[in-house]
Image 1 (cartoon, rainbow, N blue to C red):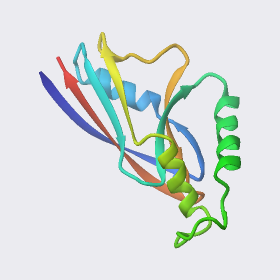
Image 2 (image 1 turned 180 degrees about the horizontal axis):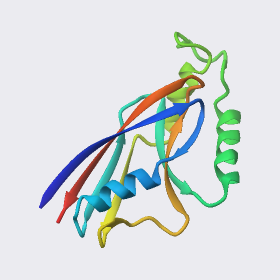
Image 3 (image 1 turned 60 degrees about the horizontal axis):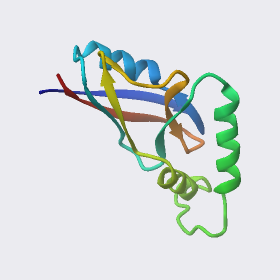
Image 4 (image 1 turned 90 degrees about the vertical axis):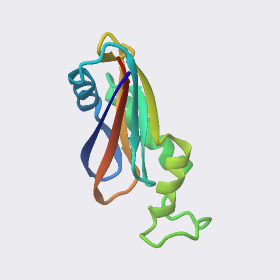
Length: 139
């Protein structure tokens, strides 16, 4: 068994989904393993990770509209508003999504489906630099 670890920095420019599929897949392929397990982990509490459709941009727009309705900014329910009206909603969005993904590595590539992509979901309105930790174990 071999292991590799890598960090990717993603500069976000406000709330939306950022397709990081190419960065993740390119690094995994360059690691030189044939089979294994790739873990993608985001080191933040107000952004998350998703695997979703990467063909039709309406999908990511619809997801954002859904979350905007489900967890609105400025909801009086929330007391934690230290960093503004999108502060606690960002944490709730992260709790409802994922902070890590596990993707099988097959024939040297992450085994994503035909229309699947890996997305960083930024939940804050302000620009940020997000860190993704990639861990690959296999042979």
